[in-house]
Amino acid sequence: MKLNQTLEAIAKGIGLGLVALLSLETVLAPQTPQWWQFVVYFGFLLFGLLAFLGWAAADMIRQGHRIRGRLLPFGLFLLLENPGLVHAGVLAGLLGGAITLVVAAGWTWWHVPAAVAGGTVLGLLFAVFQFLPNRWLRGGTILLLAAAAATGIFYFLRMHPDLLGPEREQFLALSLLLGIPVMYLLTLAGQAEETEVEIGCMCVALALALAFLVPPTAALVAILAPIAIYVLYTYRVMRSLQVLKHTLRGLSYNNLRQHRDALLAYRRALELDPKNHWAREGRWRVHLDMDFSQVIHDTATMALVDLDLCLDRAKELLVQPRPSPEMLNEATKLLDLVVSQRPGMQAAVQYWRAVALTHGRDFDAAAEQLRSVLDDAKWEPGDPYRQAVLVPCWQLALMQHSEIRKRVGKPLLENEGRRLDAMAVVERYLRENPSDAAAL
Image (cartoon, rainbow, N blue to C red):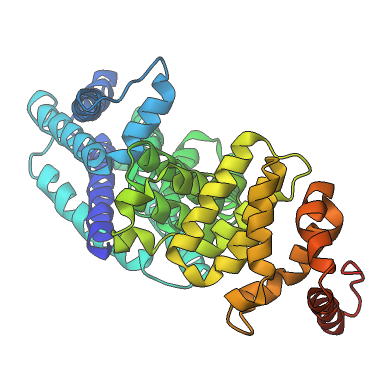
């Protein structure tokens, strides 16, 4: 994974280098830049991106994927699922545009390989910052470096007024602004998580563009606006976008039935935001969509299945006053999964299965499950999962449904030994939970 992250960082660096090449030629080209040069440069970029994504789209359609009018979701899906093709398309387009302008506009030819080489070095620096573990250290360092870079470049150009005239300043600002969405596109499509590095580079470009666009009386705007955007984005927005990106990627993987990759994506989203509703629901959807008869022997995938969360999810569904048939089916499927992978949880699963069957009005089957849990002879003494559900089992048998009470509770209480067992269970529970009178 670190190798892939490093390669992506290098691709971003080369992309930034090729975008910076346009700004460099705006300053250094012997002839004043023209609008058509921008059209050619970014036209090649767009053509390269669409060509590579078109190839990916055609391949997916051949595999049976149907768009059904959902062009925007399908386009986002292509971006997220084909990071290599997105990077290749953007870089190929920029390189093609640069070579064309070397011929057509008189750009200096060796600036092109220099931009690629410089971008590679910059990408390696990106990779180094990606692996800094401390978020605050990384964010503060990037902020200082970005501020220093923007200030240094601006004052260098101001100290050499012969390099820029008013028209070149406008074209330079435009080239910097157009580079921002290119950088963000490369960041969005990447497998690696976005860091402060990318937004730092974009804020440098924004600061320089504003410095050349705003009048001297508004120079403070060019300084404070990028800093405010950087701080707000990195500490308020970026984490939410990271979660959204992983969640969307998990959804895409699940649609392709790549369940292991989907679980990994959702797990990372929940690591970033444990309470995120869409990530939690998406993760459960993967569990429901998996055919466990096919993946049961795939140890890598099964290791990602969270059985405790599966049981919790089943509980959430079954404690509803009137769960729908779909909710009951979902809960039953989760219970089957839990007991198949962790037989030691059999008692807890049988209790919740009895609850599900009671909701489904299959009272005989529910009674059978409940009697099994309450039968001491079938269990090892001190089974923790059974001990945890004994009180709820007696509550269900005696108080929560008349049909279950008729089939289980009353017959058991007619036996003096079982009556004493019930009293012992309640007494033990109250000793351990003296403030909870629910067992009474």
